Image (cartoon, rainbow, N blue to C red):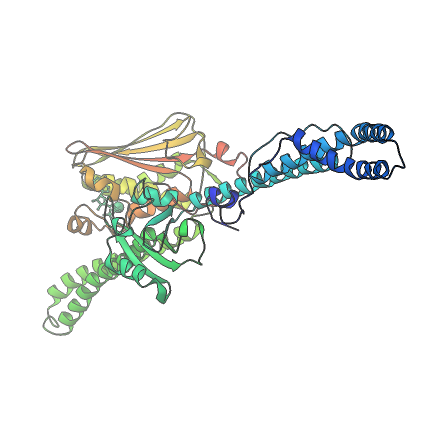
Length: 500
Ligand SMILES: Nc1ncnc2c1ncn2[C@@H]1O[C@H](COP(=O)(O)OP(=O)(O)O)[C@@H](O)[C@H]1O
Ligand SMILES: [Mg+2]
């Protein structure tokens, strides 16, 4: 495995390839002629010696030399020319040129060698292309890493940065000094002291939205591409930190919500035991308040337990077919008295036939109980709360993927004061209330909409909230219809995240 850029793995560097001697000397023909002369020389020497000794007439000797020359030329010239061409081919190859495979006049050793050489060249080209591809795919993997990764040289300048790093710090990073990217002194210090070994530290980037990272600074083994010497990776832990904060806030909020009625109970118990011991009238009044506070604690604990139960099952979509109209009718019946106390009319509008939804009847009861009860609590006195049910071809765009088919939409409309836009995205957070004192006075736990959100998520549904100040609010629950939901989704895919 190598993470060098393609240029480095595939091209031989000047140091690894010794310089080839330049092609020089006589031309192909000249060299062939030289070898030819050399081949003829022994015969010519012998014939000349014989002529000199008088054993052969000079004319005969000359004739014999000419005959030998003719025969040698006939036999040797073609192989010699081939050899010479082969030599030139090899020399040009060694120089890194790309000469064409020489044409050979014979089928001898030179031709075989030229053929083998050009095959070798083809193999080498193939190997180079493969290593080039592998380097490119390493580059792609480097870019696909979810963490931002930056490599520095010994002078702390960026030699490589992956896509996530470019997204975090800007496009042109190569060549920049690391202090231009991160100004956090402990990180720069860790880079300065890299000889002492790697370090890991937490770091936050405030712009454009605050993000927290675990930054790991490690020395790299020597002799890497571009002289990369230090590796810095940024692992985003914003979500983890936010979850930790939410958990801490939740515990603090739940304790606070429980402590308030508890202190009140303890206070009244003390009063009843002490100063109000013999005051029958006060005792009656206090016991009434105490019962209310105890009921509030019970409601809170009930809601907390509901919430944790629903969260536990959130990844399994319920599979009963539920008639929402019937569920809503029974919820409305239970709320009639509360509505009548504020002179609020509860109306239900639904078509004749409605598809069933895929769900858990008890949990859906909780959803509509919370939504309709909120509407009754927050609508103005003497108004109407309307629950409209409709079957739709599909839900809003943010429906989960597995619930893209037909849905049943239940819209709960009140004529209250409405909710300011800035509160709307936060209403489904646990204990989030627009007006805490008012919510508590009306017996609210601040957990109702959080429960609704989790139930909707378990049902692969979506809750939308529309509100205009002075006009009222509409809370709409979109639930996947049973027929579509059951088709092919007997084992629903597990979901870890939740729809908004
Ligand atoms: N129909 C509504 N009209 C105005 N505000 C609402 C409505 N429903 C919910 N809210 C606001 O959302 C907050 C959270 O609702 P919920 O989770 O049901 O808590 P609770 O009803 O116990 O206060 C409420 O405290 C209230 O401020
Ligand atoms: Mg509520």
